[in-house]
Image 1 (tube, rainbow, N blue to C red):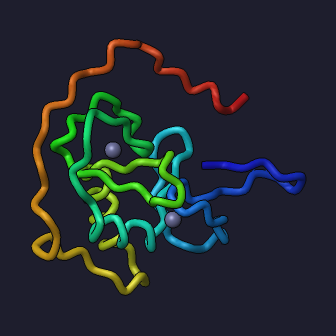
Image 2: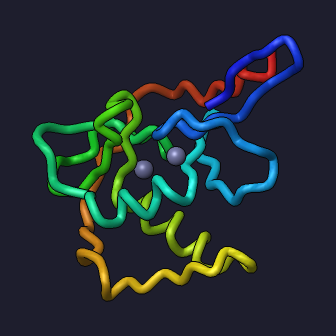
Length: 130
Ligand SMILES: [Zn+2]
Ligand SMILES: [Zn+2]
């Protein structure tokens, strides 16, 4: 997410609310959502199936069936990451040179395949550059 400061826009991890230092590898989702590496690592371990459908902060899909594991940071439960975004982020981080981190899919729960109903609104609005 982004926060406006007098000096300009500050990029903040949606999940731990840490400010981006401009160097650190982070994954960007839709609408400026951001997932940092420490959050991703925690999410890989703590991901779990929850109750009810949910919306993912990174891919912005809603109606995600509860069978797809998710992760929230208990300190900032507004942000939710779905397993698909999580594993996609993990693959990206795993390929990022200099991080010293490799994604070992076998070390984590298997990827769950779900069908997610297409959103019915056609609001492809990218009005954030206003
Ligand atoms: Zn974070
Ligand atoms: Zn997602």
